[in-house]
Image (tube, rainbow, N blue to C red; front, side, top):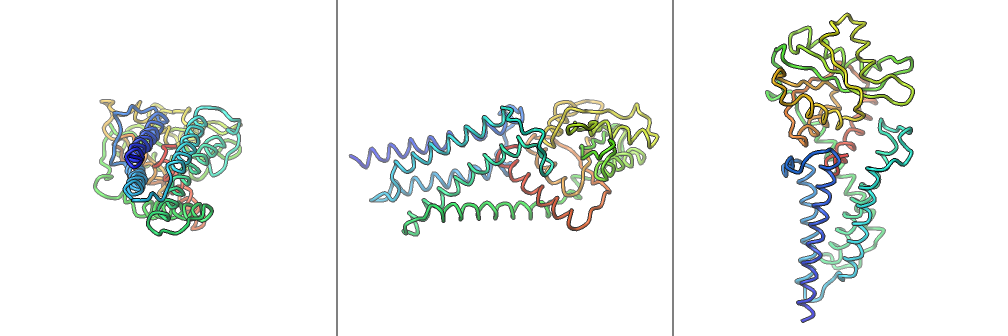
Length: 339
């Protein structure tokens, strides 16, 4: 009789894990203002989370069918409650202003970094419990909490390394990304840093130069420059526009968007304002080579069909490595939580 009751409790715990997974999916799509009808299980981040939670559920099932349970339901409930609390706090941090938006690090605002830290801590917690349970069930030795946290951190680093490898092997030179000449195409320049004196950084200038090249060679008929500003600066879009004017472009061919603050917001703007417009054939998104893999993955999350073009701006090995590492971290966080 006690065993039957314990198994009923196990199924209740499994239901709570599944509800938590559903909550994460809800947070991801709500965070990007997408209806759940856009959900795609084939998206790498969604598939990763599903596999992670299936592993957690497998642990509960194995624990329940053993003659003597290795993990008490009290331990599982305590961890589950803690993880729900951390997930709730992480979700709340997305929607409240905590006064860190004037702080920028790695090109991200303090608010976004804080939210990313909370979600990452939540993820490390899931890894820690998985390792803790695995040690008890299969290795049959007494687990050490500190060792589990250390192991989960190592797991996170391995996943980041795999993301880095993915970033460096994703090809956007295949036929899918081949550009066709048409004055119905629009070249979208993603924003980048503005230097003192409201001058475009080499990164921003390189992206704008690529858009101008596409226009002059007949691959696009219009240019859209995007991006808001950091405190005390003109917007990235305005600086890019002024740069184009200085190059002598016909200003009737240029549009500006000055409200988006991140790559995800810019892709969202493209989906909401450009996708489905009959006068537009192909949307060509322009950015740097290290940034384009994340652009492509975010577009996949939005179920948005785009073309991409690589900026001509060249950076040295040190800067390129730094940018690729930063992009890999940002992509992994986006895969998991759409931040």
